[in-house]
Length: 485
Ligand code: IPT
Image (cartoon, rainbow, N blue to C red; front, side):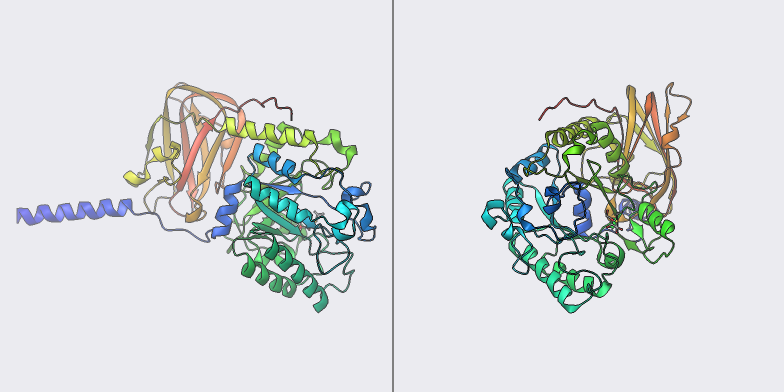
């Protein structure tokens, strides 16, 4: 009897351990492969370049100006892509055709293109030069093909079969002839008349020709969208900023914009926000704005408010009339990169003694929050949506920034969290900027006036399921590197 009892006890214990070690189940909508890849880029460059570049102060041309004016004198896509390499940006979207309808490649379906420009005697192909440079240097090329085309189809003929064919053929040219394209950008600007049936056909083309291609969609193309517009062009993702949304049918404009900006916690579709913003006041290059390029510290704020708000930053750096990036733009971008890299190089919580109230088991230890392994994470047992994780540092540390990352594949779980610190090891002080936060998602970053602590505490105060958090760290913001390109 005693033996049987012992065996039973052992079995129960083993079952308990096995249950505790099992991975948490995903909660709610989860990202697809394209979205996981897209999140991993963190930053994407945007290259607005085309016939507008050669007009004074034009950002939305009418599609009437002569093709002859397109004539970059020193165009060098390797210079653009080298800047991306130096700035740690793995993907770049080139405007292949903006609202004016001018094609930066020699499309077989229109005369309004580089083939009738002065550039290279009409023999040039910017899309080819760009995608070749990306391939050579190991950057992922992506394209903007404006659905709004003022040259080809002036309102109200957008919804004709002719226009549907015209756009579909151009999309096929771009997706068949230039190798892998990682994102296609369907601007909603000026595109209100374009209906969902048009996008249905075009989305089929994208999915068939390039299954890995992320679709940026908005308005009538939203149902095909992998990523959504963030609701502004000023570099601000919401707080909170959920990856889920189901508000595309909201009629009230202000509520709609707010839903795009913040997402909706219980939204039924996983469509995270991509934040498009220009390093200059305009989308296209104008030399009058050479002294209005956003500084490294403005870019850092934008980075924290976008990448650090569960979004991806799509940063526009428009090449000039020579076909080159202006040195101020590239220098500021590279300085931003050094600031990011150096700030997050050292997690000051690494090596601390870590404890939590509700451990899940040895594969999900809170110490996993500060390791550098990509696969490990911290979790509580199923049924425990809240917890307190306490870090006791080896020596007091001074910091002014923190960062957290959820396990994306497991959905949006934690919905409330706060961070406190202790200078004396006994009493706790709240960090006001890090109190009552909601989203974590791919990455959440918070900056605050510097504090010195012996202990740090992450309080998870609300959630839809047990937390599954990959990283938590505190950091000291690095100085801007002095780089002159
Ligand atoms: C705005 C569009 O309405 C939106 O759908 C999206 O395409 C966005 O542009 C991209 O920035 S229009 C702009 C003038 C705010």
